[in-house]
Image: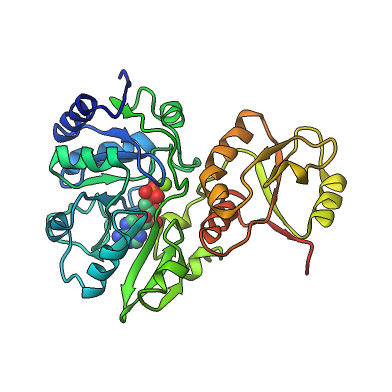
Length: 337
Ligand code: AMP
Ligand code: MG
């Protein structure tokens, strides 16, 4: 299959919408990461997403909408809190898990009786959904297990020959996937942290953080957010998160680094003499924006072991730490304890 690159001009979005309406899969930009979209109601089309990614069938997709009127076809028994959250945070990087309507095929929800719904803010994503007149099921546009793509070039690298078209809409602004929440007892539980932070949600209702966010789930545990149980966001390199002040970090790296190893730093001022580095970003927002690209860059440069600085966990930093933990297979070297 030949993969065509499209832009965000109206005629390009019309061409992409025609592909989706006819049952095809298209790569498209959102403010979180790039997505692989298909008609959420079309079982055969959704199956093509799983095939293109090599994604396990029990890992559900997020359904993208362009207006609140689309929710009623997708979900049922919607609590008033969902509308309150939608009013405050949509369009934006928040996914709500709601009871699924019978119209949504089980392939889309990974066999669950719930469905994840999000209203993205990226103008091309919104226009694409509008032109389709359908909710679009879309996971991140990477091959299963790889870091999510934040540019169309990275989508092309993973999906060339697997899907008919990719829309280029520039770099994804947020850079990590949406915050996924479930609603319970008048509050919310964060299943996956993202651009809508715990602090922001707390302005509306009580918030708890699921165990799966910062801990490795035991083999018998049920993942409330199935994506969190897979080796995810992982580069080929062996990543270690090194927790401690800069001088301890440098000492550790100097003791352990071998040829082919890299540092993942927040600023070049942190460089360790003789060890090459890739930069992630100085504050949490910049780290979120750059993290997945940095992980892909490390692979491109053939990094063997990567010594990553440990990020702050407030605000969107919790999402950065959550993804980095998975990239590192939960390997944290704690020099503070
Ligand atoms: P991706 O778009 O590739 O980041 O994948 C979507 C992720 O959202 C999944 O891996 C799940 O972790 C989460 N998700 C989507 N739908 C549901 C659902 N119905 N229940 C729980 N988690 C969900
Ligand atoms: Mg993904």
